[in-house]
Length: 529
Image: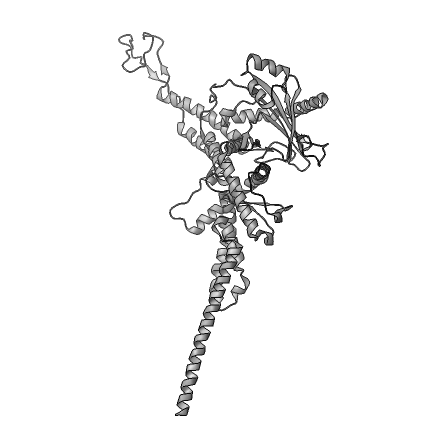
C-alpha cells in the first residue's frame, strides 16, 4: 500500500508539473479580472490588497454579467430548470410513471434549493468565465446534499479515452482539528496528531485522489469495490488517511471551450486578456495626462524667485521687483479625447469577448413581435454552442449524481416496477432551453396560421395530431407537468363527453320518434274523417 500511495503522489506531481504554463496564465487572468482568486502562482496574505493592477473595471463587470447570465439561463433557482422524462412514448403515458417522474423532479429541485447549491454553482460559473474550467465536488449525508466548488489552483484532472474527465487530484489545506473530525484520531498520521495536540488550528496539507478503480469485484458493494476509488493522503508524511469509493464520479468538471489535445478549458477571459491589459495601461496613462492638464507642472525662472513655490489657493510667491519673469504652467500637449476614444474601443472589444452585446441586446419600444423573436434566436445562435457543452459536461452529470445520491439515501419514493432497468431522460426547461425551443414553436404557429384558413376547403385536419400538437406546444413553453391533466384524466373526460353526446343523441332520437308517432296518428285521424 505504501508503494501504491507513493505512486499516486508521483502521478499528482507529474500532472502538477504539466500545468505550469496554465498556472502562469491563470495568475495573469486573475490579477486583471478576478483579483479575489489571484492565489495561483503568487500566494498572497489573507486580507491583502489585490487591485493594484486594475485601473478600469470593464472586465470585472463583464465577468460578473456573463456569470450571472449563465446562472440565470441554465440553473435559475427561481424556476425549475429540468424535468425527468421517459422518451418511450407508451411508457411515458403511464400515469404512475408520470406521477413518479413529476414527484422526483420536484423533490430534486427542493433538495437543490435547500442546499448550498446556488452559492457554489455561481462560483463555478465565475471560474468557467475566467479560467475556462470549473470543478465542483458533490457529496451528501442522510439529511442534505453538499456542494463544494474548488479553487483552480487546487485540482488537477485527466481525461479518459473519450475525452471525459474521470480523474481528479486535489490538494488542499485544512486545520488539523478538521482533519481529526473527518478521519478520526485513530486514522490520522503521527504528524497531524502532533499538530492537533499542540496547535489544532494550524493547517495541514492533504491530497484527495479520485481515480477509476481497475481491480474490483462488481459483485461486492463495499467502498473498496466501487467503480471510482477515493484516497486521502497526508502530503507531509505520504501516509494514507482514508480509502473508500464512489458509485458515480463525484466531481463535476465542465470546460467553457476546449482545444483539441488539451485537457483544461479555454475561456472568454483568455480572449479578452490582451485588450484588458491594454485598457488598464491606457487608463493609467490617461489618468496621468489628465492630472497634468488639471494640475500641470510649473515653469519657474532660475533667478528672481524665492523658493519654495506655493501652489495652494491663496499662496504667496515672492519675486524680485522690476523683473518680467513669471511662473507659467507647462503645456504637455496631451490629447485626452483621442485617448478616451481609444479606451472606448478597447471596452467594446472586451464586452464582445464576454458576449455583453448579445446579453444586453434588449427590446426597443418600436420593435415588433417578429423582431423580438429574431433577436432572441440570434442571441441563442451566438452563445448556444458554448452552453451546449455546459449541458453535457455539467448539467447532465450533476443531475445524474444528485439523483443517485437521493435514491440511495431514500430521499425519493420507490419507482414503479415498470421502470426497473429503464433509462430516465433529462428534459431541460431552463430559460435557455425554452428560448432554443422557441424557434420550433414559431414554425409550428406559422404553419397553423397558414393551414387553418384552408381547412374549410381542404382536409387539413386529417394531417394534424391534436394530442401531439398540444404536447409539442406545452413542452416548448415549459408548462409544468402538474398543470396538465394525465392521460387517464384526459381519457376519462373524453369518455364522459362521448357518453353525454350519446345520451343527447338518444334523447333527440326519442323526441324525433315521438314527433313521428304524433304525425302518423294525426294523419290517421284525418284519413278516417
